[in-house]
Amino acid sequence: MANGRAGGEPGASDLASLVLRMFTGLALALAHGMGKVPPSERFVNGVGELGFPVPLLFAWAAALAEFAGGLLLAAGLFTRPAALMILMTMLVAAFRRHAADPFADKEKALLFAAVAFFFLIAGGGRLALDAWRGRRRS
Image (cartoon, rainbow, N blue to C red; front, side):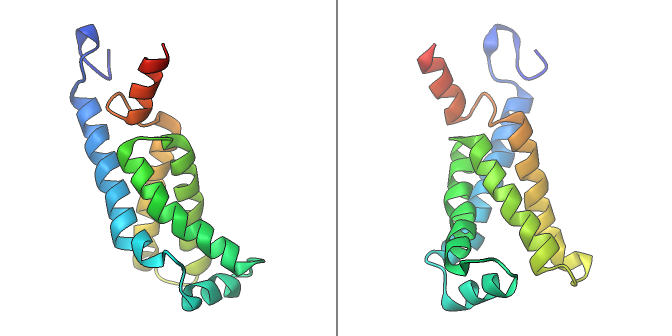
C-alpha cells in the first residue's frame, strides 16, 4: 500500500508520479523535441560530428526520442520503452555532445536522464495509460 490507499485508490505517490511524468514528458517534447522534427541539416551534421554512422538516422532517433518519447512519457503509454530511448539520448547529449562543457551545460540532459531512469525502473504508475491498458487486459 506504499503507492496508494486501501481499496486500490490512488494515493499521494501516484499523484506525484503523474505530475513528474507529465511535466517532464511535455517539457522534453515541446521545449526540446518539437524543434528537432524533422531534424535540421545543422542537427544532422552535429550528430555526424559526434561520430555516429548514418547521422540522418541517428538524428531522427534522437528527435523522436525527445518528441514522441516525451509525449509517450507524459501519457504514461509504453512508458518503459519511451524512458529507455529518452535515457539513452540524454546520456549521449550529456557525455558526448557536452563532454567538454562545464557541469551547468550538462545539467539539463542529466536531469532528464535521471527522471527517465526513474520511469524506466518504476514504470508509469497507477495513473498512467499503461496501467489502464493492463487493467483492461485482466
